[in-house]
Amino acid sequence: MQSPDFNQDWTSIVAAAADVCFKPWRHAVIVIGSDEFLQKDGERDLDVFNAISTDLIARIECRDQEGSRYPEKDLELEIYSSGKDLNLLLSWLDQPERPILWQGQHPVWMDGKTGKRCSAPNDGAPLEALARRLRALFVSTEEN
Image (cartoon, rainbow, N blue to C red; front, side, top):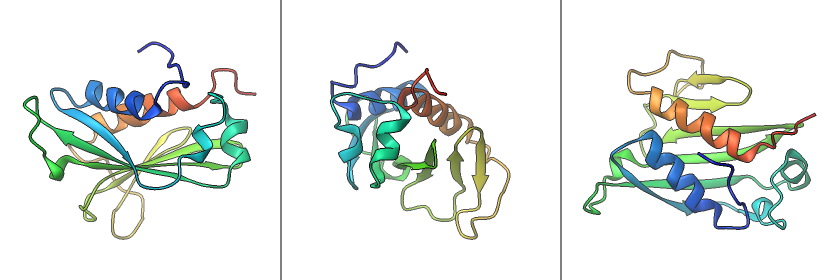
């Protein structure tokens, strides 16, 4: 995937990344929390994320090729900064028993109920691929 133009709608970029990682499904992104930190003149480096205290929370909705909804495949995405780092949380929406993926410098799977570290689920590879792809999109390639 080529480097995104963050002056365009970033939700389209996230949806396209989900489409690539979860073929043949199609995705749309609905903002749940504030997206204020992604609206600063197209900037996308960590200073932008650190300058704003608001997290981004979005729902990634899943559809088949004909447009029928599959809410059991919907995901929740949270993007937040911690110090000088950008972190992502990805989880299956409305499935609290499923593991949660935390992606910072490396992926960590957590039990959805206890928050304790656990093994990746059998179907976790596409979620890890999406987390890596999104983090790469949102983190400047010129980190210090």
